[in-house]
Image (cartoon, rainbow, N blue to C red; front, side, top):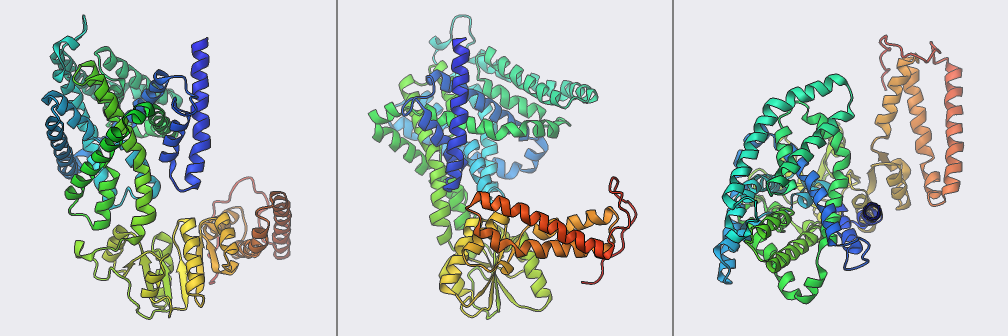
Length: 621
């Protein structure tokens, strides 16, 4: 009972740390990964000491890694891998080979045996899939060239782990084989046999089993069966002396071709973020600060040296990318990875490395992982705004730098929202100058004939170069709320003559813009009009005449937009805000009902079933 209580207490501490630390980190702009890592450091044995002991931490970390690797394996569909074989084998193979060989050479220069040097090369050549993917996704960089190339490298690393795990037992000493255990060759053969067996199991046996479950029409059993396979394979790997994490990874690969893979993914998706967070917390909590305090220069030097070496090699490997993308590619993958903990565990069992060396390497890898979100934050906040797109890196862009063309309208941000605005103005023969800060987006837009300049719309010099001092109107359509507000303030300060039109992502953002001085009639809430238009369609389905449904929608828009300024002043007074919201809902309902009754809008007042007959067409607006 004491053990169960301890486990429950640790689970409570982990979840409490996540709930408190991660939102704070996100609000401060640090990202969730750094929040999880910081939470782990805070509750770890070296600060608050809220988690029981190192062994408890490792149990939590192992569970997080097991589920994380299962999800990674589930993404490795053979058809997808074959389609991406060029960048995976090219970029990934070169990165692992170049980094590994460099590390092996350095290790042997320090007098380590070739076996130990080879282990170090394999362990430190890998990057953190969990941290890199999570960080790039949060910032919207995963679909950019640097993100796609980083993803290809990470896929190769995930795959190459399997032969690494099979190879490490061969590098140990004979005395490392326990009584009744497997020798290095036997263990390698067992790994190969298990992999072959799993492929056969996944191809021939899992489809009929999942089909049987599907016929039972019990959705939660899909999750149970997937977890059963994960746990079963993990236990099998543990039986032959290998890591359960490898088993989970292989189980994911086995199910990657299953016709029910998407069902499994959707069932497990809710747990994905939490399990990754659990892993990050465990990494933070497992950092041995005692060892770092004892040998700070050695461990921090190793971490920084590893990141400089890998970053430098990645910089050369990404030579085909633009300067900006190349920098992101190098910084994102420069750290050590979570597989280092797994591989070093095998190496310790095989006595291919000493416990002291393993502990030093684990601490250095953990420090490098902890630094990565901070480095990406510096890149985002400091480096990226100062980059200029080098058109020598891409012959596709003729006008990378903004120039003053004397256009009366300047659009900042040319994503899905900005493009609609731009097309509407151009179709009505109003010339516009467009700014965007995504090179990949600019390339894509150029293919369709749009003339888009590269530049950060929040910088005064860029706006001046684009002609803001002569323009009449600036349209700000960027999707990031804080950045949108920053651009508004810059324009108000340096170009006060400009009429500011802004895209508001939601009502809260609209309140912030009003508080910053934007006129309510000059901001458009992103989803407001489309949601009202959808409601108009529903009113028509329930029997309201087409032109009257359209009028109800216009009345709703007019009323709701009219109260924005008033509601913005009450935002910080929750009770007054709630009271006034109730009053406005009643007034809006009354206004719409009076208008509807006056005009006799509904021809059918039985609202239980929508009418399927076609509604009359809309009048010209």
